[in-house]
Image 1: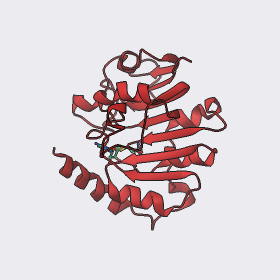
Image 2: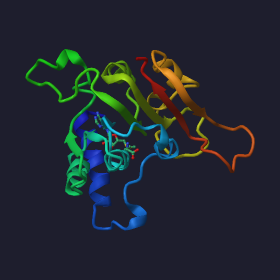
Image 3: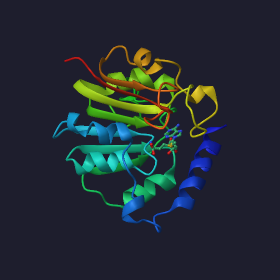
Image 4: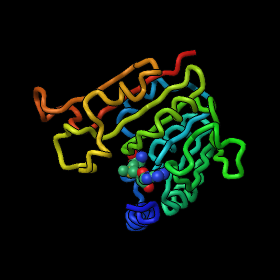
Length: 210
Ligand SMILES: C[S@@+](CC[C@H](N)C(=O)[O-])C[C@H]1O[C@@H](n2cnc3c(N)ncnc32)[C@H](O)[C@@H]1O
């Protein structure tokens, strides 16, 4: 799929969702990893929600007092998020695969607003582009936290992508972020009582060494 059709695909999804149907129960919510381990977050600092979609993670981070950026390829999602006027939150339409979060772009005219060592918190949920992982490590401030949660290959439901390119392999988050100190890692598939626990998502919270 080309970048343009990728953007069109997500724009179509978000246009159909719209903001009109907002009720307290369908406001964008943070991913379960962030809501479950919210107590690990710093009380101040900077954060970014990468591939934010409707911005549940970003809104949550900004509401906790973090100066938060949100980026997504879908201009429709970004416009909807900006329309919410959440204090402390800035959302930008950006193709993170085209303009990765690398310092090498920092001095170019196409520079992203994202620079090395800037973020105290980086959150990614339900999105995988392996080539970005090194850049995310670089973009974390010393002591900064990464919250990463997305679908893995042993997932038990039909939720999420089917293309293995977008699915994590066994323990892959640990490998991708082995430069960070692991605080939390979850990866359940078909063990034990399948009526309990999230069987589809791999989750990692890791910290950049000081
Ligand atoms: C499954 S949604 C997840 C959205 C949000 N993180 C969440 O958990 O609800 C995947 C998101 O990735 C975004 N996306 C896909 N490719 C992207 C790219 N190259 N750059 C930035 N965002 C991208 C899509 O627009 C979409 O909002």
